[in-house]
Structure formats: structure tokens, C-alpha cells
Image (cartoon, rainbow, N blue to C red; front, side, top):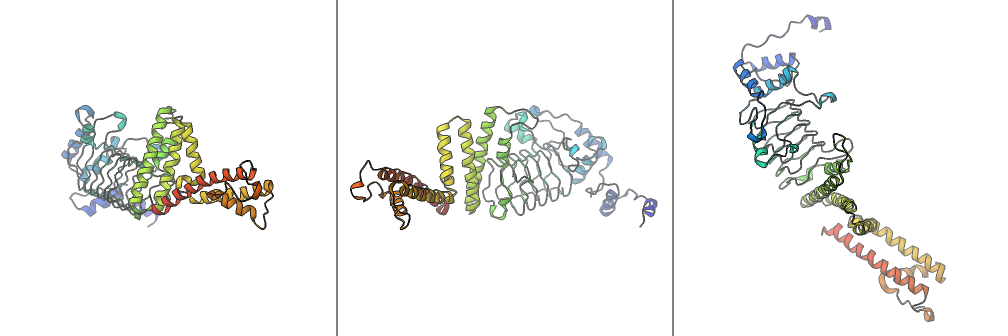
Length: 421
């Protein structure tokens, strides 16, 4: 059909019955392809409109839709008429990302079909900036047990303490959503987008994870401190997409989201949280048999702990921690131990050649360095020259002490690397 013919085509008439296919075609023609249900009647519209005019009062647990069972048709109408008809937040339009989505705090959407709905910037829980009590947070949390959220747009949504048990979140987009302490027991997060999501203290026991998108373009993952992973199969996720957890990224930011410079004590606490997040996640990964991935996050935790020591002005521990990292990567980088072993052996061999005239070929200097390194070089058999004041004996003693430290690092590194202890 040509553009001229299309322009002359009659508009689709508003259906007069509950023919779902006719309504879907009508909504598509109206530019609302996410709507699938017949529009709610005027009485229901009036009721919902009156409810959303209610001003939330946290201390009294008053919210527009608290304990009200909503249907998909209800949610569609609330989205379409949001902000006097402006409609849902369009996440693809960056200028709209500061808009507030619809407020469904305390609403009951259990087992409701919410597929494809633009629930961007949904307000369904209390922000921790308000310092709510546990009871207040529970009363404000949305109920989404068993809800079908496949392909739903939940970018930037506030789902703190939300109940998503058994929900199907297949291919949903949760980018920058706040799921702090949300309950996601046995939820399906297959092919879901979780970039920059806050999953800290969330209950993820038995969650189905497969082909999930966890990192943004900078390879920064979600915040996961104190998250519960019991019974979750972490082996099906490609963890190589993450180079840094969101907890660490938050700690490394010198300013808050509104541009204010962070205080020193705030940054210290954030780095402590980042350490805990990496260590907890390493333990969860190791419990799932992912030792190689676990080692990467455990090593990262050790490096973050060194930053904590510096910020606590514990410079002795900080320097010793740096030495352990340089020597063996805290036991997670065995190649470093081998490198320093070879450096010490050949370095002292050259020193023995220069000071003691031991030959490089035949490799007397190298043999002497090897025996000294492994603790048998304090009194090498050099005839009359073997005395405590002999420079070679002194060097051999120094090499033996260095060798002791490197051998200990060898043992610790290979034990941790290959036996996981």
C-alpha cells in the first residue's frame, strides 16, 4: 500500500465488545502495541484515578494501591494515562530517565500477566534514603509472586523488598533497577538484562539463571553484596563478561550521583562493602565448583582490602599486603612466584660469578645459587674460604632467607590454587 493509500485508509474503530484480537489491533493502531486487554470500564477508571491521587504517607503506610489486586488491564490503563496522558517513561529517550514511573507500592500483582509492559522507572518500594523501618519497607513492597514479566521493561525500577517469588522474568530488561532485598526465590531470570542492577541483599535462592546480561559496556556487573545464592546454579552464567562488580565501581566513584564529593568515611565503608561483596561471591562460586572464576573474585577482594588498609592508615599491613601481591598475587598468581624464583636464582648466580669468580660454564655459580636458595648455602664447601666473614657465605645466607619466603609462597599458592584450601 502506498503512503497516499495509507493516509486514506479508515481509522480502526474502537471495539464495542471484549474481542481481545480486535482490541490488540486497536491499541496497535493507537501506537500502544504493549496493550492487549480491553479497556477497563469508566467506573473502574474513576476508582483507579481516585486512588492514584492519594498522597503516600510512609509513617502511616498509606499508598495509592496498597493491598489492591490489580489486573493487567488496570496496569495498562494506569500506564497509558500516566502524568495526564503523557504515558510511560521511554528509557530509550535519555531525557526521560529522570521521570517517575507509575507508583504501585504495596499493590498485589501476583500471577498477573505483565509481559512486554513498559514498567520503566516503576515505583514499587521505599528508597533507603527515606530510612524506613523494616515494617514500613514490607508494607510498601509490591507483590509480584508468580507474575509473568517476560520481555517487560523494568529499567530503573525501584523494586526494593519486592516479592518476585516464582516470577517469570525471561528476557525482561532490569537495567539500573533497584532490587535491594527483593525476594526472587525460584524466579526465572533467563536472558534477562541486569546491567547496573542493585541485587544487594536480594534473595536469589534457586533462581534460574541462563544467558543473563550482567555487565554494561564497561564490563561492570550488578551490586551483589549480601545476596543469597543458595541453590542457584551459577555455572550456567558467563562470568567473563564482568571485570568489576557494581559494589566496587560504586566505591571507586569519588562523587555521589548528584555531584557531591564523598566524605572519607563514606568511601572507606564503600570499599569495605566492595571487599565483602567480592569475597562472598567468590565463596558462592567456589561452592558451585567454579574455582577458576572464584579465584579471580577472591584475588580482587584481596586487592580491595589493601585499599581499605591504606584508607585506615595501617601502612605496615598495607606494605606487607603489597609485598604478598607482588610475590605471589596472594596465592592466586602462581606465575609470579615462578618468576621471582628464577630472578633470584639467576640474579644471585651472576653475583657469585662477579664477586666469587665462580664460573658460569660449567655452571658452578648457578649450582651454588640453587643450593643456597634451598637452605644449604650457609656453609658451602669452599675450603679455607668458607668462613662467616666470607662475602659468598653472607650472600648465600641472604639468598637462603629469601628462598625460605619464596618457598612458603610456593606452598601457599599451589595449595590454594589446586586444592582450594
